[in-house]
Length: 328
Ligand SMILES: Nc1ncnc2c1ncn2[C@@H]1O[C@H](COP(=O)(O)OP(=O)(O)O)[C@@H](O)[C@H]1O
Ligand SMILES: [Mg+2]
Image (cartoon, rainbow, N blue to C red; front, side, top):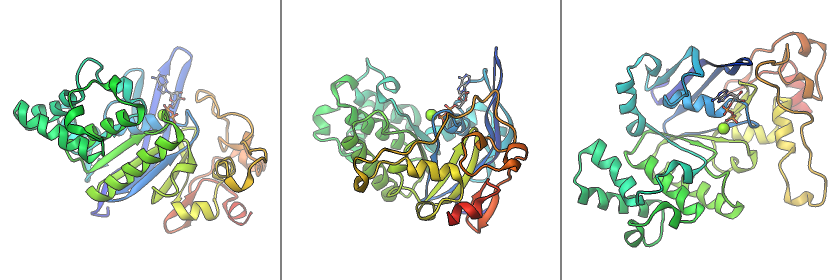
């Protein structure tokens, strides 16, 4: 393993047992993130992005969820073999997560200063006064104006964008090596989205962290990510450096996502949409799970499941026709 590799997920399998059957939410996902690198995990809603992240963070709902296979290596150590107490130590100080919805992740009856300060009191044994100073420092760091005056305010007194900055501050508090941001800007207005995304990218650079950026929006990752992993029905179907993907996707699903991005130079034209819907995970189609929606599908796609073919040294595609796709 590359010594710089922070996180390596290997062949992860997660199931949900429900009354209606077993859903394979994550079906053999592998990815890795190096120090200082941003990996964007992309895919439509329901493709298993969040469940993968929850398994990595150790916050999966068990039951109904269950990890049935694979390894999650953090700095070379398999987290799945650790006791809960050891995992708790890694959460926060080793890796931290930012969620989509700050309002439901923050405590409404505690001031933001108390919530930020709590991290330092619990994990670093700081006094209340020192913790408060740290909270102000963090609020400055995520560019919340007038931090000193606002540290005593409650979450509802902040705008959506500012609340998301507080979530980022919480994640940064213990200076983790890795941050997982799960749709961190989805709930925000478009202009605020860009500001929060820029802040996240800037902080990542400043602090040299690894970042896993989960999103369903390929439009937001071009400027931020180094590499992209595209998920479909619990699997990674394409992984590549970000610029390669924009130049020429090697999987028809990625192509569909790219063609669905609104473009300023094509105003007025009807927006492309991938036909059909993602499959029910309790009844994933045989062969390639994407074949019922795929404009390039052939007979073999309906019967054989494609492995991830190496397109080149740092690129893979789970499509029998990746060459055709690249050239198409
Ligand atoms: N708490 C749960 N109970 C049952 N099934 C779940 C639960 N959470 C997730 N799933 C299943 O896992 C799939 C993937 O979910 P998720 O990872 O949240 O998708 P997304 O890519 O949108 O983040 C869902 O479509 C659902 O089938
Ligand atoms: Mg999700």
